[in-house]
Length: 446
Image 1: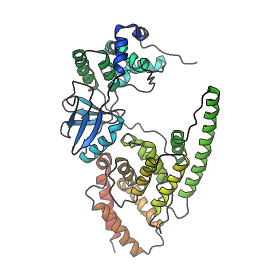
Image 2: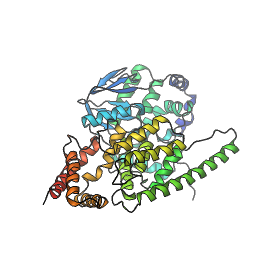
Image 3: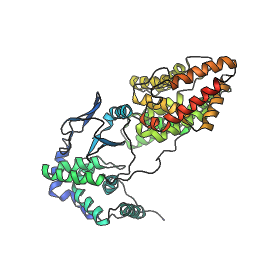
Image 4: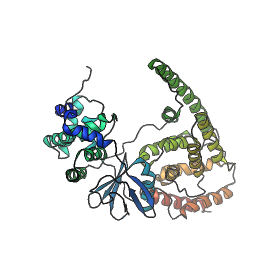
């Protein structure tokens, strides 16, 4: 049986919202919306052009680590303060936020947004009745009764319809607390908005903690290549719908052809007979790690690309493997007409996996931590990795290998922080140090 749109019970408020006297005012004010800018200055996050007057950083201000309770990474990210307020960091400021988190070991929490759920009726999509009923049951479980849900939705209907449809935004995936605050600020007077702001933020304080990881399942070379190429492959502009369809079909076929070619080449490279650890399994393990830590990425596709290629050239007898791997990655990016800035970032990430210097860019730090996550694995996985690395250097005499390997592991152990990102440091720092110390005992045993 074919699904059909369900009912939220507030459809009349949606249908007639454009006839409300406040609709045109909201639409007019939304044309001059200013979004915040966030930068890292010293040890504080500096906010400028902050749009919400009740916030302590309106219209500009700074926040250090002490007032922060936690950070929720998303679009936009939220900085939750101990006094209950919530500050928003747009995507352009995310790199500053991630760097701030890593420098100060700020707690990062994953939460399920109540406001994301409340605003679903205002998305440019529809869901069936069964899905709507499940959502109402979820609201009940977290203590938000049906009347309260309906009241919130009716209160914001005019502003949200103007925000998403009157402005031709047509968002169909997600609307959240930031969106409703922007919309209501355009509709309400200063005093009325201040009241709404406090109530809306207070409601968001009840966002439940997400259990488990909402990880994507893209952890194969083929699937990740397709995802990146779908975004990166050049597009040709067309005028007619017929020509658009033709170009779209042609582009899809070209993407699949290039995906198959690159997947075959990379799989062959990672399947070379001398490899024991730096194999397809290592790449897929890195991609799985990224699937779990994707919220910490600034430029996700660039990190994916760097992972795919970072050990593509691997000869244990050479010292320029990373440089040659980066050359390969950037050659393909040239074919895709990617910018010099993108290629430079990908090259820097791949070179960083040589682990010679500590990265200062957050995406580089994330990739390096992903690459070194094996050091913090359980003992059996770490020991298997250790044996595989030894097998890749089977041509090196035992005494020489032991000394060289001990030097490498000791250099890791001598660092003040083995992992550069707060999340990996929290989870893997101690297990990694224990594994390395145990391996060093074995290496130095007569």
